[in-house]
Amino acid sequence: MSETFSQLLLKWYALKGRDLPWRYKGGAHPDPYVVLVSELMLQQTTVKTVLSYFDKFIARFPNVESLASASIEEVYLYWQGLGYYTRARSLHQSAKMIVNDFHGCFPCRKEDVLKLKGLGPYTVASFLALAFNQPETVVDGNVIRIMARLYHMTKPTDEIISEIFHKAEKLTDKENSADYASAIMDLGATICTPKKPLCEQCPIAVYCLSKNSDDVDQIPIRKKIEKKHMEGYVYIIRNKNGDVFIRKRSEKGLLHGLYEFPWSEKNIFPDAEMTQKTVSHIFTHIHMNLKICYLKAEDFAVDGFFVEEKKLSNYAFSTLMKKVMKTIGLER
Ligand code: SF4
Image (cartoon, rainbow, N blue to C red; front, side, top):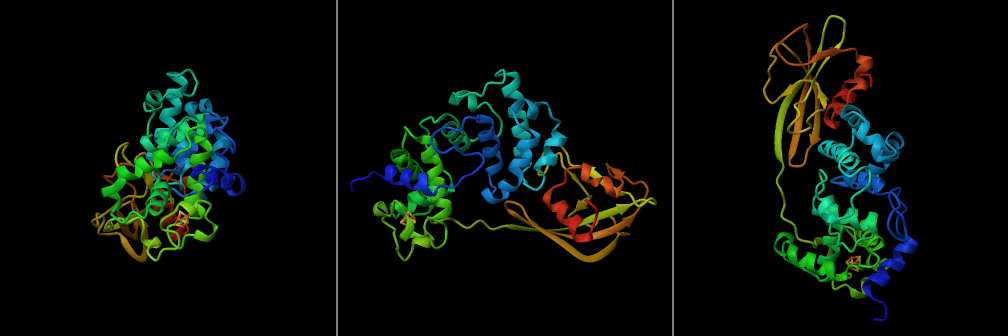
């Protein structure tokens, strides 16, 4: 083999790697802010989904100062639809820390980056590699899959995860870590895909022990996580003016800080009119079905307030509540 693993990978990346707005081919991205925003957005969310939000977010908050000085409500408005709103809150808090504690200069030492909010070891490594070309090894789901296939590792991933990290670390090109991190993630996203990997087009096939093997689709081996099913009721409550009742979720817990229509696992308003309409949504480990119910009321013992229907768009709602609105044709 004349060319090394990373040489083959980087050559392929230069020609076929994806052009993404938070990417800079040929080294570190000149704007760490753009990298930080993308890293938070990409946690548990696909590139395709992030692409439809990223430009609008950057247009409204073009730098760390503009984000730090915005209200969290406005940040949520630009985040709504991306889900996992804790990330938006973390990004906002991190922006404030960078402005206040680091005088607007992005930290580039690992111990400082770790102080920012919402950044786990993976995101920190990725941020340092992509924003500062630091010699970090980035291990996400794509890299785990590629390493497991490269060495034909057929034990469950959680049993071999440290071995995978070790192998990934040994292969990382420490001098070109920004491009290497992007390249290996692109390889996993476009060539070494979870199903039907394109081994014939793979630039590192010569190093791969799983190339065209019958079981390649099954590697890496993962334990199946059972999703919990939850049934409930969501209430569209109108007063005599036709305004709609909404409430803000508590500052802690699932979907905190977002607005919603009251909902519950139990039918808390027995007088409500049940419809045949239901809305389904999948959170990380929960499969939720909500039956839509209508109710007329002026005042009752639930915290919240009535809003004109046309003003609902001033409030950030979760994806689940947006599905409710879409199902019943509420104006947005
Ligand atoms: S040869 Fe096939 S299985 Fe191996 S890394 Fe490439 S795409 Fe994945």
